[in-house]
Length: 331
Ligand code: UT7
Image (cartoon, rainbow, N blue to C red):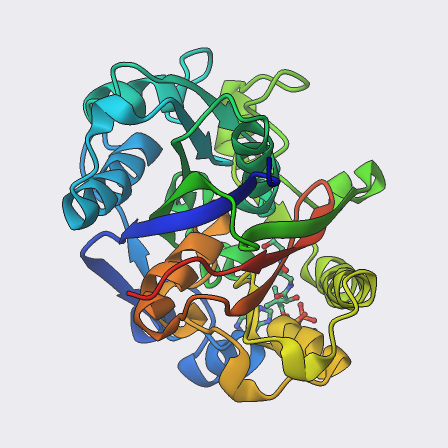
């Protein structure tokens, strides 16, 4: 019997309608469009508004988009993974709610949290279920409502993050397509540089912490930047070497959208031309777990069967890694 590989066979996406532009941020904090654009590549980001709407709202919309596009029967989905750093609630699984709402009534589900690397790690997990031969339809959703943990008086973070979601379906293939290799890493000494200190189990929220806005994200941008540049480039090089890939073999770099300068540095390190680098950071900012699937969503029509994609991500924790995947279909 030939080897079973895990292929992405469909993509869906969703971003909320509300657009927060750099110009609007100029009225909120001491910043300007020129600084944000030149330092990050971001022009605008989407924000989810509305009482009680959390990450599952985004995840459901992205999954529904995939279902509508493909005609997939949600009852055939066996596993729903929601990769997210902003679950709806503590204790209650965001993925269970999402699965039920999309009609995936026969699926089991769980959330997966690895900060901005959540979706990348989720690809690895989804692939293992498929490769086992036991599961045929795994829905992986990357979704984050980052605006729920941003202090819109902090110019170091509020200019970067946005809300959004993307979904992919993993199915088995016996062709030489799908996920080929991965190189995943983490280093806990990085957690002090990017975190929301209060509101978790170490430091539950107190009225004082909320007053001091310590339940919002804090980031020491420069340190995270340096680590992201070094490590994303490093894992991209490793995955090429391990798979004997020359730069000309690569069809697309699918890199986490945190800062255009980090993406450019990764592409430069491997010598990849700009035309092969997927970019949508200017429209959405950093959507954490949603950046990679939203890139696939935006570029789906350009992807061809057999294209060689190198994924790379870096996030809080620190967590990072790269994946080599061969695209499985023509749109
Ligand atoms: O997805 C998870 C991983 N996260 C990341 O990968 C993010 C990594 N970090 C970054 O993308 C960048 O570090 C930032 C975009 C957050 C900041 O860019 P930077 O080039 O590292 O700026 P900086 O923090 O070194 O600040 C440079 C200057 C400072 O002024 P002085 O001290 O040189 O006078 C800042 O006070 O820019 C100032 N500054 C700003 N000015 C206008 C910082 N933030 C802003 C701002 N608007 N929003």
